[in-house]
Length: 298
Image (cartoon, rainbow, N blue to C red):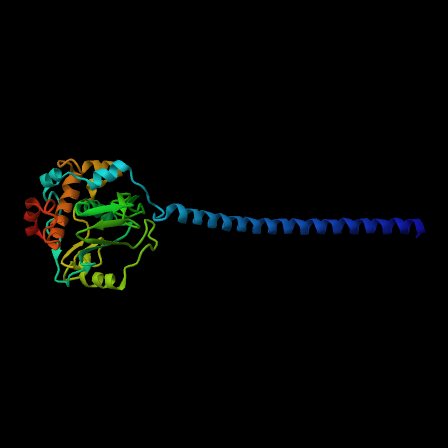
C-alpha cells in the first residue's frame, strides 16, 4: 500500500470518527433538551398550580371551589320573604311530622339555643332544605357570605344539579340563637368540613333509630334544633326546584301560590315554630299566632 493511499484512508477514518462523534454529541444534546424540556414543563406546571392555588386562596377566601356569588336580588328575595306570604302558606306542602321531638339536654352556645346543621354540598336533599332554613333563620337574624352552588350531577344522583346555596364559610348573627353549620363534603364529594367530637356524638345518637327509621339512619341533612327537635332529610319535595335558577327559586318564595313557596316556606314555617319554642316565642313579631298554631304539629 502506498504512503498516499494510507494517508487517504487514515483521513477518511478520522473524518468518519469525527462525524460519529458529532452525531453522538447531537444525540446527547437532543436527550438533554428533551429531558430539560420535560423538567421545565413539570416545573412550569407545579409553579402554575401553586400560583393558581394561591390566587384561589386569596380571591376565594371563604368560597368552596364550585360556588359562585348569588345575585343580590336573589339574596334579598330569599332573606326577606314577606310575613303575609308566610302566613298565607302555613305549613304548605311540607311533609307531616318532618320535625320530631327528641329528649336531649338543651344544646346552647353563649347562653342562646343552638341550631346545628350537618350536610354536604353534593347532597340534593340538603340543597332542598337550605332554602327553607335560610327563610326561617332570616326571621331571627342575618346571614352574610352566602354563595350559590348546585348539587351533584354525578350519574345516578337524584335531583341532579339542584340550585341551592352553601353554608360553607358563611356567617350568621342573631340576638336570639346561634346557628352552626357543617358542610362535610364538596360538590365533588371531597372532604370539606368535619364535625367536632360533640357534634359527631349528636349525629351518632339522634341520626339513628329510634329517632329516625332504620332506612333513614345517617341521613343528611341533619338539623338539631336546641337538642329538642330534629330534622333528618328534606322537609318537602325536591322536584319543585327542578330546572330552576337561584333567582327563580328566590323570586317564587314571594308567591304563596307557587309550588316552591308551598314547599320551602311551609318547611320554613315549621322550623320557625320549633325555633320559637326554643326562644320562648321571641321575637313577638315572628312568633305570631300563625306560627304558634303550628307548634302542635311538631
